[in-house]
Amino acid sequence: MSSRRHILRGLSPLTVGSGAVVALLALAAVAGQWAIPAWADQDLATGVSMPGGGHPLGTDELGRDVLSLVVAGARSTLVGAALVAVGSMVIGNVLGLWAGYRGGPVDVLVRRWADLLLALPALLVTLVVAGIGGGGYALAVGVLVVLTSPADIRLVRSAVREQRHRAYVEAAETLGLSPFTVMTRHIWPNVLPVALANALLNFAGAIVALSSLSFLGLGVPPGAPDWGRMLAENRTLLYDNPSAALAPAVLVIVAAVALNLLGDRMSEAFSDRGRS
Image (cartoon, rainbow, N blue to C red):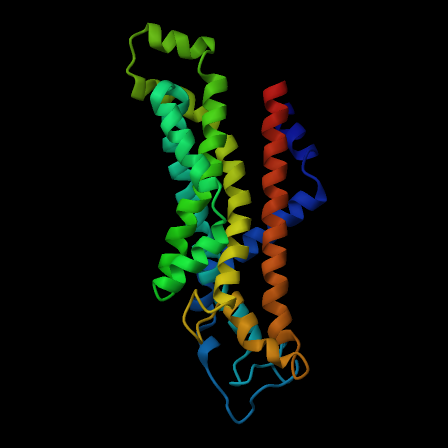
């Protein structure tokens, strides 16, 4: 009970607000297109219009409701970024755990691979690869997964090296448990919270990266509901309906900031727990 009260006291209004924002965005990503099926309806006779008349954020040049579009666009923006964060975390956990526990040539090989990828500018490489491959959302997500993983590899490896020579690991090895069992059942649960905190930060970075690619025309196809694509298509409507361009831009910023705040708070919480 006391530990629960301690956790609740540690939740600042900013952290609670960030969690609420992320929860709402997740709900929009999961159920947005299902709850608002009319996002693709066009009214060419109306065209672009300012907020009002049943359209809280106005309409774009095709007469589509901007509010419906930003809600429906949460799926492509957030789901792709979540796949990048999860994929990067999986690669980082597997290679970082293996290198940190095994050491020796395995550790050197994994570290050199991570250093090589870390030296590459992720967004620029993704632009080049996606451009050569003819664009495509799946290709952009796949490239970002690979290029985001080095930070996870280094983080998990460092955490495993710190745990490697602790008493509970030596006890497990003395009992004759296999290296795989020691890594997965004893060491990994102790480094997973750190990896999860870093995954939130990767999630925020992936939102910005995928929105940038969509803005440049290398993400989702034209007309698809996506915040980056909406910003690109509606940037010429700033004088006719500023909400059409500002709404997706603000949502990208809000989502990235909320995830960064949650990731930082989670990292601080795990650091405090480690010191205590």
